[in-house]
Image 1 (cartoon, one colour):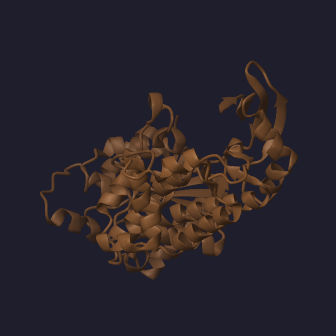
Image 2 (cartoon, rainbow, N blue to C red; image 1 turned 60 degrees about the horizontal axis):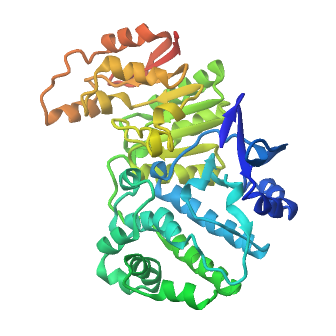
Image 3 (tube, rainbow, N blue to C red; image 1 turned 135 degrees about the horizontal axis):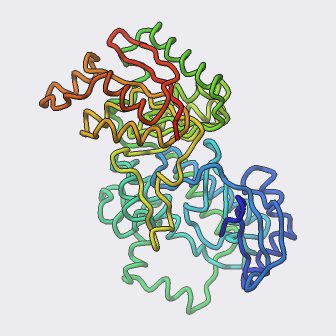
Length: 442
């Protein structure tokens, strides 16, 4: 993959040319693209150097990674991957691997991006990507479904997902007697550890897997994944925030109007919503004219609800996990394999509503650095300042010393004015919460 003059290109080597040509000539690429399952190939160019072809492909608006996906997004990606594989098998094709990084999202709808993972099916072949699928899709889902723990931090620390050895070690013993767990976790671990000779016997004796059995395996896995749900049943602090916050109806209406007026006036095509919670104000921005919103939150239950809102209402909203104290860095080989939050996440507009105090008060982030970081994400936007007179901040300070002597509305406004023009501001609550609309200076 490479970029040139704003375009995204993929080189097809001579080694991969025959597989590419087979899928192209069978209409696989065009038909899947028409259904929205595969990024379209815009142009096929003559190859150069060691490339047989150069493909120009559609650019995905935002590249995201599995460690940023909520449980529901990851499950959606897993089901989509299996559906795609089943579709390909019916057409005489298969996937050469099962990496989750080949799935991206446009809004909350998954799309496959790796054309060259599609190749002709060889009669009797086994699923070479089974373990990879388990580690990058299934095991992270089981971590939340069976242990009540989000996958995000683990996945980010181990970019290949949750290893079968780790999953087998921590999954409750009673779960191991399930056929699904036994075949996809326990046996996978035994094969990898070398305690079973079955994998070797298969390759030596030339055993094969009939195509119908291959498809049945995928369908069974799909049925199981579709039945999984998060195991953390106790509500988190912020899961019901949109229903239990301190705003009155009139104050909430004022906040909605401010957001709508900002979008109408500034006309941001893409919006980043920090602290998006269940997506209430993301939806308002879209209704006012924004084309797409990418939301971020730390609360995994709130993110699952935001995903449900996006799916149920057909919104161009992609809700992602973010620990704003520690955004994802550049990582992988040479620090370039997976680019960090700061390089990938840029937009025309920003919503940072009821957000800044969670960093400034809860985590001691200096106000000047926080303001500069927020403004760097988009040239225009709205930032809500929550003062010490607000009950939420008072609760934060109840169990600690108040060391935030400069945490005042006037200081926040002064810091914002150093990096942006303050277009307008409005008090939107009796506790003194203020919305600031800004336009970045440089």
